[in-house]
Every structure is written in structure tokens, then in C-alpha cells.
Image (tube, rainbow, N blue to C red; front, side):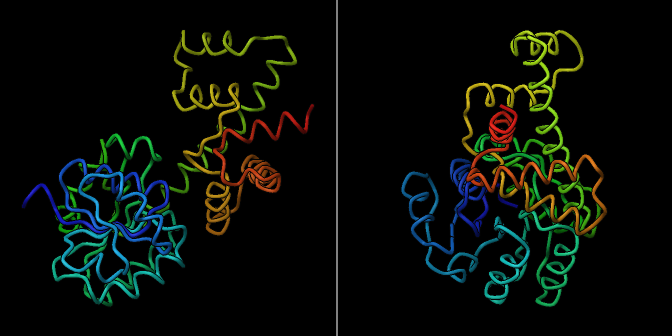
Length: 288
């Protein structure tokens, strides 16, 4: 199989745009579609190998791999109902949106009804890892479908974890995102404790880095919090959506209930489009 496949990316948000740009740079022929056409066109204007198209049919017709990167399960289902009949025989649908295991199973049934190979394949990582080809794929589906999509997955990711054959990828994604949210809330509260104890944040970071406790994600978020830099990698509103998906699948622990409340406060304060690091801004304003 050619390493360079014609690929459709449905969704030109931050992650979809980064995926399209990376695939274009790695010599895949990319057709990018977005409900708001201008957004896809803006991405294509500054990307190599990416063509913005006006309809879903144009995007998927002739594509070997179709990637959906949309907000939620309802949006994915609506778009793909208009796309599946246009997909080529032998193409594979890579469902990379964070939709939760229940929607993942429904989408798999939709693909099966149309005779289309399907992978439940959300990713761990945001826009920068996508642009660098360092995403971690959390894939559930058949070995055959995975082999078909593998050149595209490898172009975008440093790891492809095959975790099951059903909705296990989507379930794992919710657990990972809950971990990121809980870690960010905990970090914000510990920085508040540092302030109360008169501990410089840089000193705290150096102490972590001197031993096994340093966590690159947390150190990155600490810098963003100290700089007041909230350019979204993982936006607050999307994190809140994912925590709600987790709550619909299993009871939330007290810790995650607190995290959900902090996300709700941050979004209500107008920071829904900002990165999770904005949780600290809200905490400091409230506590100050």
C-alpha cells in the first residue's frame, strides 16, 4: 500500500486543521471540509497539499481514509449520514472526535450499516503534537481496518495503541482527559499553597525536576499559569464536555465533581475558549 494516501479530514477546528497541515506536509493528498467553509479555506491557503472543499461528498469521494474531528457524537453522526454513501469501497473511517463510548458504538453501527470499515480512534494530544506528528492514537477496531489506515495514523502520531475492537478507544480517551483536568485543578491549588507558604514557583518546579515527580504536562501548565498564557491546546469548554461524557458513563468521584465545578466557573467567566490553564486565573481571582 502507498504510504501517501488520499485523505479527507472532516472538521477544521484547531485539531482538525493541525492534522490536515501535518498530512499535507507528509505528502498525503488532503481534502479538508468544515461546516463553516471559510475556516477550511483559511487553513488550506497556508498549508501544503491541502485543498478546501465545499461539500462532504467532495471530501470523501476517492479518499482512502476519512477522519472525523468534530465537536461531539451528534455532529459526527449528522455529517457522516451525508458522507457514508459517497465513500469508496475499501475506504476506512477513522473517528477521532471525543464522543464517549456510547456514541462510539452508535457510530460503529452506522458504519456497519453502510458497509464501511470503522476505527474508534481518538487521540491523546492536542494541536502542537498533531502538527509535529506526535499524537498518541487510542484505537479500537479490526486489525484489517487498522492496517488500511496505518500510513495516515503513523504520519500523525508517535504511537498507535490498539486497545480493543469496540468502543475502548473512546472510553480510554475519557479517562485520560479526566486525568488531565484533575491534574490541572490540583496544580492550580498547589500553586496557591506555594503562595501561602512563600514558596517561589520556580523553586517548586526545580524540586520536582530534581527527582521522579516531574510531569512534563504539569510543568508546561505551570509556565502557562505563571505567564497568564491561555492559548488553547485543550479548551475549557471541550474539557467540560468530556467530563460530562464521563459522568454519563460512570459516577464521578468527589475529585472530578470539584473539577467539573471549576470548569463550569471558568467557562461562566468567559474563558470557555481558553486553555485549561485558565482554571488558575479563575482560582486566583476567586481566592484573591
